[in-house]
Length: 600
Image 1 (cartoon, rainbow, N blue to C red):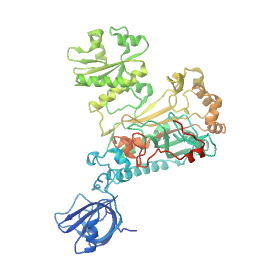
Image 2 (cartoon, one colour; image 1 turned 180 degrees about the horizontal axis):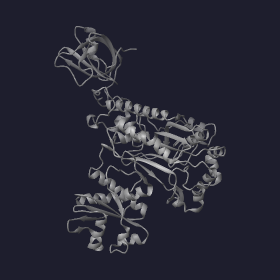
Image 3 (cartoon, rainbow, N blue to C red; image 1 turned 30 degrees about the vertical axis):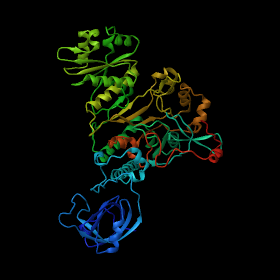
Image 4 (spheres, rainbow, N blue to C red; image 1 turned 45 degrees about the vertical axis):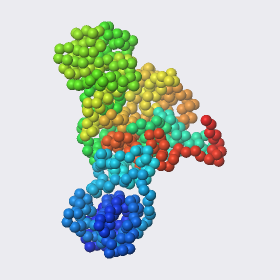
């Protein structure tokens, strides 16, 4: 080893010992004839002292600059009184240098590297307020420098422990880790595939897996019984704060001979452990609540509700039949709904209400009606048309009190759910109801198997296409497809979807029928999923699985503003790798080998 110790481990026990340290020059200070260098590595920093009596080392130290990589040999000694740093593990000592070796010099960095944390523990990420503000574009272009910052060092250490904990948990429960192929076939997983052209088979393509879906099920057919992996997944989706463009990682797992309940009992304790071990958040629910998809959409306007606060949307359609306010009565007459959200002690100005109305419009509403509740009166456009008596009945149903504001949405059921959910979410932020010290976990169950694809004017899968429909073949034959439920479930936390899963369809006959309803012929199913169909004909066990997104889970537990903050080498908000310059053109020779021509 080039060093005898790291820059974070020396203390008074090492006094008078000869040591060799290596690291980066964090700061150089010239104090009245003595030169001080704070030498930094991932473990901390140590103060190195250069005395002019050692002319060779002193002269060399005069030349070094921040971020140079050096080695120094010297003697550990106690710092003088008044110079001790009790908040630093190495703050009681310094090293009197005997020699210095420069491994490499450094240009002036585009931003300053923050001082390392004074605690040796990396169990808690330091607050963002302690980090110097640097634009993301600059940080990502020079990511190799950005990763030297203490916050990023801590993140990588914590991520490593996080994944190690997951692996230990799975192995203790009898799961076997298996790596599945990266070059696979294209599969309808809900997003666009990344396609990889084949050189040997021109005009044909591999697809990077959106998930190891087919492989994990084939492992169950193979008799593995319990599989998992920390799986890389690839989806060509538009970036957003909680979605990393290109690739992400999930805990992919599958189990044989299980019910939905068995999956829950396997996953829920893990999420509790990760919350307690790797965050400061307190669990809101000891037992995660379970909501049906329809219940969640009606009450909270989303299938990933934030249950840290209690605001609940209610259906008031019955009150609005034939009422004097045509916006409401016409909606009910056409088979649509009227939903209401009572906000207690709102204290909203007219501008606040206008902002919430704009939020509703962004999510598809034509407008947002509202009523302010006073001790002895009501204010708002609907009041005059509804009449005081009906307004009071609605207010009483919603338990509205003096100072509350009631918001109303009227449209088709799903559309109303979505924009009222957006309003609820905005109110939660505006009123400070999203307590960052809490983790509110929950399950969504009973998803619809199918949905209407308005763009293509056809029935499509609403969730995982390989899910078992509730009721099996009988349901597929006898029910309206839009009324069929699947054995599908989601896990959510603090308003974010963390995972999806399902009990799988393991019957070829049921699979053919399920895909037929979504517009796939038997031939198309055989072409796309021939491997699975063939395998199922040789004896497939009932099985089910789950796949929590590890990156998003870390983002939620650690309160990161963007999912990019928890990757070592993320893409930027435009799905580009600013450091490596990807995506980038390739040579004509490469394109010819693949039989590809680029057209504008």
